[in-house]
Length: 350
Ligand SMILES: C[S@@+](CC[C@H](N)C(=O)[O-])C[C@H]1O[C@@H](n2cnc3c(N)ncnc32)[C@H](O)[C@@H]1O
Image (tube, rainbow, N blue to C red; front, side):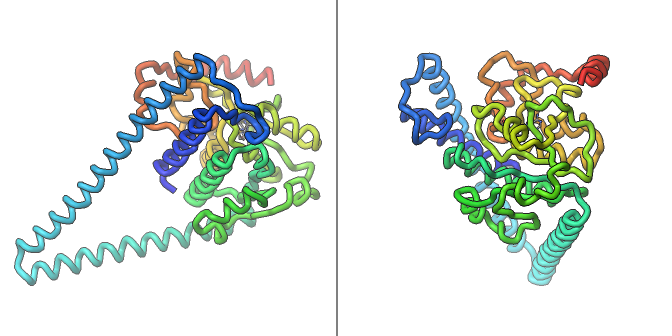
């Protein structure tokens, strides 16, 4: 899936979230059991601002679509004009050349697909195992579940492109989550483990190797150990379920670790990332063995700034904001890379 599609999807999720807010529903936690709450003055102001922003974004999207359509039409006409302006023999040659190019492109694509399948099959045997824990669907709204499915689709696409892919396992893959995932195109053919049982049950013989990744852990992840199985919480919650994965891991008596973000950069907000960002960072690290590069390549620039507005602190929708927002922030940005000396101190402290 293209980045743009991911962004669109998250934008839809944000729109839905806003629609619920407009209706005065509290979407924190289990929406069905929460009483309606009137919006505060500042929440109304924020909502209005967000609505204007969304309207502008929708307008821009429509313009882009229109522009793309015009461009396709322009190219088609250009091609027609070219064909009409040349003699028959030359025309045939040109058409053949174009057909040849198309064939070449298709062959290249299918070759790439074959290589991807080889890499993924190899990763199943020897790759780093990463679990996405899908046991949180009861804590998410339908839109959040949908957003998580899109994130998983994105993870699978990025993993397939990676020169050093991981072996991804989806555990707790049933119920609402399971049926939503089944709707994803080609999901049944994905090279990954789809397990309806929880990881603690399915991987009980590996319990001592399970490491739950959670921003709330006191342990910093310095290296990836091929013998360990890293678990990422399948949750889209704007961090309203603070500490839930940490508590789960503690209750189950399994290890935890957090990404070493603070050692390499300063974030404009908390260090809680989305599922796809965490997986992408792990994949980048497997490829480069360099945390700094992995963070800089994956964490959006706007999250690495010290933004002047608290509004920029929304979490878990990292892929969901458009360039507009980035452009707005451009003027405010202050990219802060952690001083290597401070990094050393932090590492000693951990
Ligand atoms: C959107 S977060 C969910 C936040 C949730 N409130 C929680 O307590 O985990 C999705 C998952 O990404 C992983 N994650 C996010 N930020 C992380 C970080 N800084 N270090 C390690 N794992 C992180 C965790 O596994 C987390 O459950």
